[in-house]
Length: 231
Image (cartoon, rainbow, N blue to C red):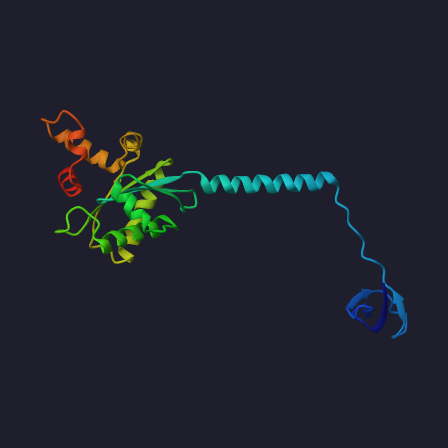
């Protein structure tokens, strides 16, 4: 491409090409200003096919790993009040699924668009229940049961602690909330279609009630009675 030399500076020359673009090029200091020169085309760099294939493979692996981490289940929080809901989070503590465990839970979720981390989601649920009066005994403030379960045991304690701070910072410290670690009861609860926290409280009730013969006698108790009597 042809260009005209405008000046010599900084160890090279400033030129303007036929498209009107200004460029700095090395050399040509010996040529007079105003001289027309032929610019050398920029060298074309060819990447070996194997390098391109390797880069594509690495990119595919990275995207696949991220997709797996985003969709893989990491920890669960069950919210019981009258609606009962299971919340599933990934390794980034982002909600990937909200499953109702009863009809009230299904009704509540139909009016909500939940998203975000565990603290944001649980706080939104509690606010929604309080504002709609969607709980068993309207004579008393709602009593919530939060059950934490995780595929990695240490996470349930971490998220329970951060949840307590989130509730307090959102002005929910006056709401009665029982926080339960229910990892050991998660598989039984899944078979029964209820939260592990309710199973754990019912099991505690059965231990102290020598006349009880079946766990089912306590599973359907009002949540308020189950929490106050089992703890």
